[in-house]
Amino acid sequence: MSVIYPNQFLWSGFVFAFLFLLTGVYAFNYSGKLNVYLLFLVAIILVVLGNLSQGNFDIAFLQPFYLKGRQYYADAINITDGTVWLRDFTKNLEHFQLHTRTHPPFVTLLHYWILNVSNLETLAISFFAIGCLSFFILYKILYHLGFEESRRKWMLLLFAVIPAVNIYLLVSIDSLVLTSTLIFLLGFARIFDQNKIDVWSFLFIFSGLLLTNLITFSGLFLFAFLGCFSFYFLLKGKWNFAWLSLMATVLFVLSFLLIYSTTTYNHLDTFLQASHSENPDGFRLFHQPFIYFVTRLEDIGEIFLFLSFGFLAVFFSKRSGTEVFENPKINILFFSAISALSAMLLTGAYGTGETARACLFLVPYFLILLKNIDSDQFRILFYLCLFQTFGMQMIGNFYW
Image (tube, rainbow, N blue to C red):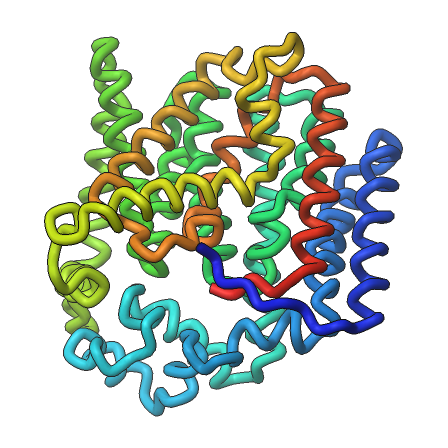
């Protein structure tokens, strides 16, 4: 599960927590009167206030980087030459911190590059700024998927108060992954809106694919998504998405061949060594079957927990007004994502849990299901999410 440390008793934290609660209630009730740019700002403020419930700027923005000395930051501050470090990354893999050795080197290098020209505060704010781009991209996706303006505004606010997003958008690398995977999803939303594959849609898909895989091996999810998505249309006799997937994959391989030719960094070799480092005894089902099955349940349970109990109530409800599978195009996106994640879980991925953070990219695929639910049901869902996040941010720090 995500690691949780009980909060310190700080009056400032209580003040920020109640400001978070009041801001959420006010913004939702008056969203119709607020223009979308102001709502973007409110959504960002909700994330900031939710995390300042920890007590202060240092606890919310900085400690996730340096506390315990186990994060990428601990390795980044020891880099003296980024080029040499990248060249020798795979060779030195076992000497790095856990997170560094189970991710591509570009995450740690990003820390190094920012720290090289500035400081930890700038690093934290930079990560948060990149994560906040997800609000703008999500809004554009909702537009292309045919969401009405009022529902798009509500979705922005809901996105900001969902526990997984509110807790992990601030300074985790998974907020960067969320942004890059949303770029990928934007390409498909454009295609559905325009009923054609254009250059921009392809560029969004390829860019999201490349950027995501530069910073996390979970980027394999996007390849699995492409496979599931293309397979669905192949069953209908349509080859256009199969060709799109093939072109994106070829460009992806060429991109990493270019990186290899200029830096000698071998992405495939690093992935294989990182997999071995995390699972030294091989496929866990064969040597630890009980732990394999328990962690699969834990992974799924944590995703649902951090989506919120309110979302689960709507998702599994049979009541009128809570139908979430009414739109065929959205269903294709959702079930392709679920099939892709299921395939990853079957391989033993996410053996240590923490899927609320590591699978943050999955949240938008659940959210788009809310396109047609009744407004009263959506209102209840929002308030349940808001209060659950309020409680979770009050009780502890959720480090990764």
